[in-house]
Length: 289
Image (cartoon, rainbow, N blue to C red; front, side, top):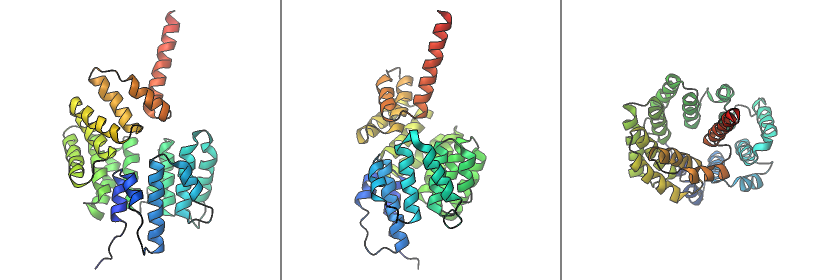
């Protein structure tokens, strides 16, 4: 009989965006050393997801295990966008070290960082071999960003063979359905609906349902879901970005949501696109003047 998975609920909370619940319910006694390291990684990654970068940087010292050092690097990378070159240099140095370079969490963090950098080929160098459900799920995300839903589908099939009911398999299935579009949007909606019936409602689940609604043209329902998500976290970048899009489709002002997004997440792709559009408009006006 398989040993009980003491980290199942903690992982699930993290995957579905219940970050505070993951932190609050992490005091698990009598864990094996490897499980304790995985638990600590999930807790610190939850703090990172909540924006508490400095806490993670302060608490993980140089004697910590490799996976925790990798999580600290992620916190450093996200906390200081203007000095990311040194963080990326450290990351590449560790990945080249034969003693630790193949560590699954280190490869996962590398994939996350290089995906942020939009260097998808570099990300896949470290994630494509898989090895964990999180690495497979990250591969699905990377291939979707590369507009290669065929490769994403292959990764999803691998995940389904390992565990069709795994939360990450279901999430990856929903992401791929959204990317493919058409009749698949309804299937994605049903996956998020199933999550909302089984687990506490999170911003991630609400945003998933809202994006499905927008694809199906149900912008009123999408707005209701997104405002509920905003009540849970007023600074969540995906909620704010989706509200900008949803408001435009409803003929409402989106300027407040875009201003909040600019203030809290100046690097967000929607902010960059809006700034680029503003610059183009300014140039056009000047050329006519």
